[in-house]
Length: 237
Length: 285
Image 1 (cartoon, rainbow over the protein chains, first blue to last red):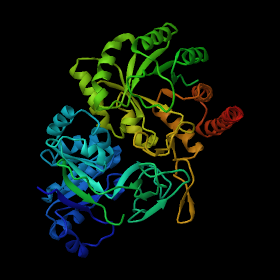
Image 2 (tube, rainbow over the protein chains, first blue to last red):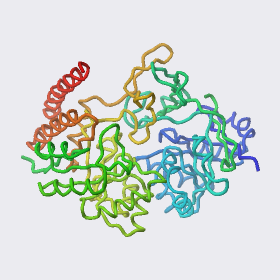
Image 3 (tube, rainbow over the protein chains, first blue to last red):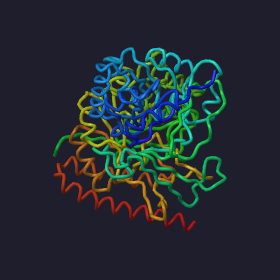
Image 4 (cartoon, rainbow over the protein chains, first blue to last red):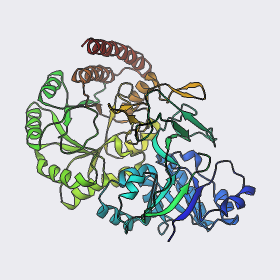
């Protein structure tokens, strides 16, 4: 069975442009695994479904107490409006809060900031943890880790063509800690080079790509492995 | 005097360094062993659980607490780490941990301990802290990328908190989520000057003055442990300890925030001269 094909909604795409975008994918991702300021509104998620999106995943990041409360309120509002996207959680506290509220029977994946560590934990622990918490799969961009998984069992959603390198809560666009009220970064990217910095593999000069409040290297295409149940493309990379 | 009772906790890699910190007035120490991964760049570890237990016994005889650090344990070594922690038992005062899987395994093995949650666990909110508290976490090393205002809720939860001197020991990017190290020396590029479309770019972070202001605020909110990290250069760690001691004394003396920050910056500059001398000495070798 071929992997489900997903793509991340480009920031700034208007609702009028949604139908053309969503029809090309089995699933649409929105939001951010790195910045709570980029959470989609309930209206935007509703518009995606109205535009014909067959499935939606909302990405969420690590969150402070304040941001956690806002996201719980947002998803509560979605639930009351009958919207039930899958949620990619990167914060254990957020996962706990959603599962004890209107999302107790929701569908979750484990987002990239969290999945980096979790992918290195024993498979027995992961299976139990996933079953306890309604987690369907891990989001990752690490081809070697995905290829190391057994053919049957844990599933991954593979993000490409960018591979996560690092992130900061001190916003690279504003220089201030925490998210801004209007996304200063929206849709923008910077390509960074530094003497001596090499790409993964150590052969060529490396180019870091700054997007949102995270830095990436260019990654490869998704590996051809049975554990890859979904591919997630980030346009504009 | 404020009566805060702030303690200084220093990371150590061997007996010689440990004894220097005991003599210098440390209140708590922590160390790792070579076979259990912990987040340290180039610093030493004790060679075995037995050696660590001897170090802990010596530290405790001098009135200090001694913690074992196991804060970067991956899948294959998790069982080994859990068994080592069980073996160390009451011979150490607690364990610095990060991994949820390790804490759950320790609970399965009915190992009860005093756990300190590492900055690497990225515990940014009270709900996450509660999850870890139920697994035995009794103290939290506050994530570096968290302001006092953001941490205030967690700090009211009855779990002790620790802070690094972030003006001195600070990861420009989220500690525990950074893979920006390359080259034969595994050097981190976070403080380098990058170029972007022909313009200079530096990864941003709070100023030293902002970091000292945050330290003041964290202590006001209840943080009672200042951490000094392990270092491949024991002389460097000694300088950081000296800085920590001076800051602690000022905080205990009840310096108001504004004058604390000014004095802290002067101390910081003086310690920086010490680092300059260290670097110059190394360059001459």
